[in-house]
Image (cartoon, rainbow, N blue to C red; front, side, top):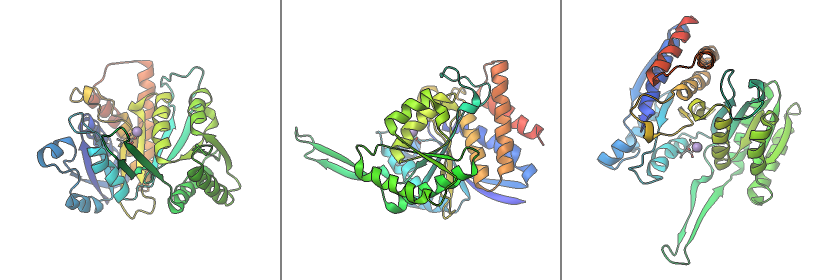
Length: 352
Ligand code: IPM
Ligand code: MN
């Protein structure tokens, strides 16, 4: 048996509800793959901040470092000033653990309703590789003459050669493994000329090592249009942190909603634990009601299993989710968060 040391940060709002179901499904899939999941829960988020003023104590960061992976529910609460938990906890973890790949598959599962007219599941099957440690998220910039009419706020986008190259390399490697072998760089190089030129040049240079991968480029504004009008254009998409944030919410919307969108904050070298989380937020408006859809978290567990080198276990979870989604289409029922989790877990077990 292999022991997986998993840190669990359920977080705020619906986080604890969806994470419980992710763990349920993980327990269901583990035995058949000789896995023993050793979980440690960390109380982080709004409650801790209110109680102690802490977002992520150094000692907790050090403990998290000793795990094989992290499962995170959601961070953020209307009672906490915007940015405190996002920067102090979520982004801090992404930066500290060098999660330079923010992997966000956008797939339309059979049976799932999309707002797009006339698309079939095979029309929406992309992998967005969002950079996770740089761009405007880096926190560079500042405020001058605050509170005066002459106030100036700058928020610089950081793009290092090193940072751009490593994410572009990862994206090419992924594209080379997929049947369509296409990579689209999404940026805004007609306006963000410094950063855009760097991204373009790196894509050209790394692309020379992947002659089998077709390379395309789209400005981010056009990309949002084509996500809706021609999602088939996209296979692997590589883009910076902020553009990736925005287009993956759109991706979630076209592929059945934010309740299904999974993500992995990945450090491919495994120098640090990678962290898996649904793309959605803490949804305080529906927290505690047992109505949140845990599917995004369960699909994030599949990404976790894949990252741990267990593609069969990951596929088993994905198949169980796909079957559940097809059944939702055939016989729609009101189901609680726990019910959905339990039924997906049953399907996982049923596959043996
Ligand atoms: C996401 C979220 C985060 C981000 C926020 C909560 C900081 O929107 O994971 O997409 O912007 O990356
Ligand atoms: Mn987002």
